[in-house]
Amino acid sequence: MAERESLKDVQLRLLTRLQAARTESVAMASWLAVECAPHRLLLPLSQAGEIFAWSGTQPVPHARPWFLGVANLRGVLAGVIDLAMLLGSQQTRTEQALSECSLVTLGSLLDVNAALLIDRFAGLRGKQDFVADEEPAPGAAAYLGGVKVDAHGGRWQVLDLQVLAGDAEFLNIGA
Image (cartoon, rainbow, N blue to C red; front, side, top):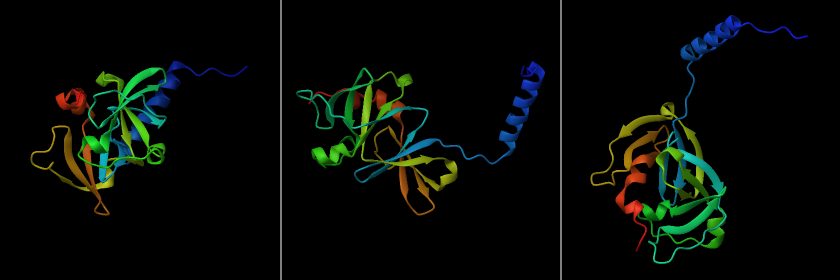
């Protein structure tokens, strides 16, 4: 019979692990880095939901051009937003181009059933991945946060999904 570990031993083992984690220089990811047409964006991991492959949408008549329609994502209907178009890109996508895209849902805590169409995932990023911070452009939408610059000079715009989920234009899909 296997020897059972006492509660005290478990607590000591957990305490040792916590102390080691505090003293190690552990790189923590804070953002999901994505690319949408010309935009490089950082989505806060705490506000992002699940990632899905593109599977098509059911169009909604009289909707804004950036609202692609509704998709069934694990039994939940979600409005699909072309993030590049929402941010001002005039790029129109072919079916082949769409098949290479992915969807990122807004986190459940934001209480908006929406998914953002993105062109490509660029990985996870943390504070350690950036060498400089810049303020958002004057007049930028409230959901566009500061810009983070990586070691190669790449500029990444922070997109606050919580602010986006409350934005009146984002919530009004009617054309």
